Image (cartoon, rainbow over all chains, first blue to last red; front, top):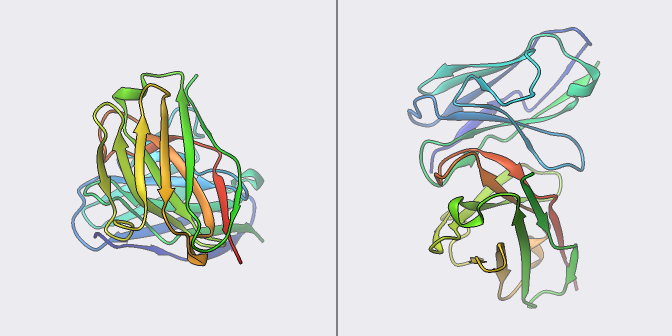
Length: 107
Length: 121
């Protein structure tokens, strides 16, 4: 299986801050990297697919970049409604695998 | 509107069997894979496997192979996740989800509401 290492596991930032989460794959996954947002008690929501493509309706403050084994997810200006846990997922090879998650809190 | 509606919460004893369901609507159920994702209490997401309801082609994660059975009834537009003998470690929230297109490697853009399974003596 491809291992996905996500960091940090948690972070605390102020409203308006730029937030960055990284995800590293154990092998080359090209650009087959997706990001999900999960709010407490809710199902995950797909935010970004194919490394950098925003799902319809997702605010433009969310973005993604990278290729190969190293990927980055950014919230350009953190909003209160962005409080959630974020997961990366590789969709290059079955079984698809998720990173361990990053819990984002407001400082 | 695409919807995945899962069956309700379950409380079971170790050793019991269980089958939970996920009913799809608003799209061609036989044209998209359906996947299952486990989330243990306070933990992350784990991809369990996928099934193609059109022909019941199924792929499991090695971590779940032999531990659960994924099936589908295309006449009912329903996918299932089944255990023959539950363990306490099966206690978790289980989500079904549908990929963005017709490939089993595509990300999931539609999710069920989740089914909470509690296994306790």
